[in-house]
Length: 172
Image: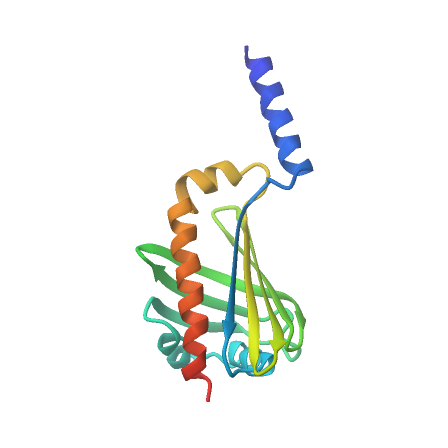
């Protein structure tokens, strides 16, 4: 019986890896009107506690923990409470394409979180894509069931749309 359970579990895990179902994903796309990719990129890398709190009412605390000359390796602390769900992680910048992409990673309770944000010029506007990948093959079902539920992902999507829309008045 245990052998059958383990076999089923391993087949499920393999199928998850093979078909890309090995983590929780959240993709939010929004157009920020009358702001360039450079303006948004520069805003992200010039955050202060004051700017962070103005950006969205669900933002609670921001700290720059480590700064590097080329931003790769910089570490930020973000604390947000999104409809009761606390998001408080240290984010390490692992890759950037200036004015185009920021890639960061975090880890909470042994769960890996990847955050990618891309900026694409669209006339006078910028198309922003906010992408989160949470967990891995072995943790995804726990993460989905107990932490990043469909309701949390829905609220996260709302939050991202609101905060990037706020850049239209926050960035001068």
